[in-house]
Amino acid sequence: MQNIGKKIIVFSMIGLMQAGLGASIIEASPKVDNIQEMRQRDDHRDQREWERIEQQRRQQERIENERHEREMKRRPHESRKQWRERQQRELERHDRALHQIRQHAKDMHNRWHHR
Image 1 (spheres, rainbow, N blue to C red):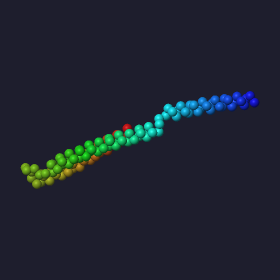
Image 2 (image 1 turned 180 degrees about the vertical axis):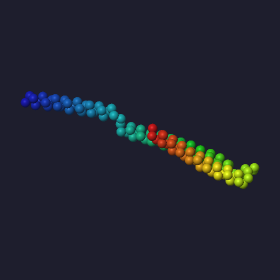
Image 3 (image 1 turned 90 degrees about the horizontal axis):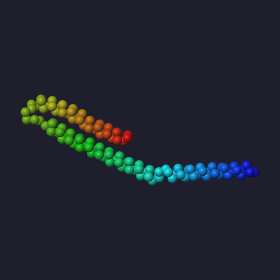
Image 4 (image 1 turned 30 degrees about the vertical axis):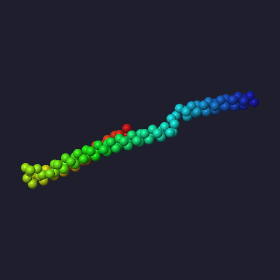
């Protein structure tokens, strides 16, 4: 009978110690609200960064389009043949420039997103 009493006391103390350890772990862990708030803050920061990258891309495209438009006009000293040749080169250059601008925006977004 004495053995059973000792075992009950020992196991009760072990159970109390486990409950106390579990309670301290739960108190030390971050609150669920804080985790959600941190995620929302991160999402908001990511959204602002994406908007900044997009705004920069649009501005670079606008500048490139304005430059392209000026270059496509015929110059006073050019023959029709020279103008057509220059237009062809300019179209190729313009396409490459727009591709680079868009690719750079994608790269920036991917770099930021995968931090």
